[in-house]
Every structure is written in C-alpha cells, then in structure tokens.
Figure 1 (cartoon, one colour):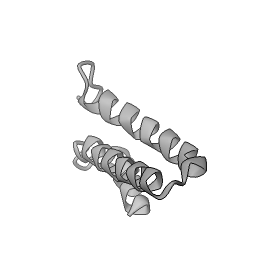
Figure 2 (spheres, helix red, strand yellow; figure 1 turned 30 degrees about the vertical axis):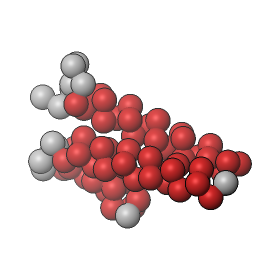
Figure 3 (cartoon, rainbow, N blue to C red; figure 1 turned 90 degrees about the vertical axis):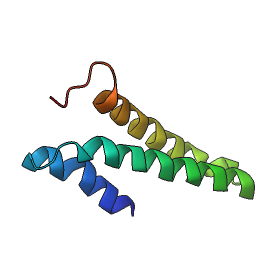
Figure 4 (spheres, one colour; figure 1 turned 45 degrees about the vertical axis):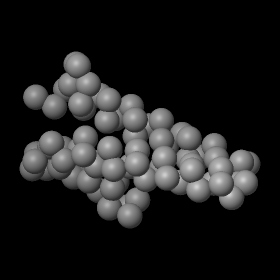
Length: 74
C-alpha cells in the first residue's frame, strides 16, 4: 500500500495527469501512518515509532502544501 501511495505522490505530478491526486494520496498516507502510530502505541512498541513519525510529518507537510492556503497545484 505504501508503494502505491508513493506512486500516487510522484506519477500524477510528473506526468501532468490529474495532479489533484497528489494531495489525495498524501492525505491517504497521513491516515495510514496515523493508524500505524496508533497500533504501535497500543502494542507498546514505543521504540520503533520514530520512523512512522517522520513519514507522518512528511505526508502532512505535502498535504498541507498542496491543499493549504498558498497551494502550488495551480
């Protein structure tokens, strides 16, 4: 699922085919990693959370940049 989301982040903008899919893919990644963080916390795997937090922050930044007030998708 993460590989498909990565393709959804790169291919629409690179090929200029429906670039509106990029922020949607980023939002999907935010939800995916929020779920991963929730599961890691519930299972007590606090040591391995750092990677998920980094990916969550990057996906949030990308979604905010594409949906935000100064969106550069135009």
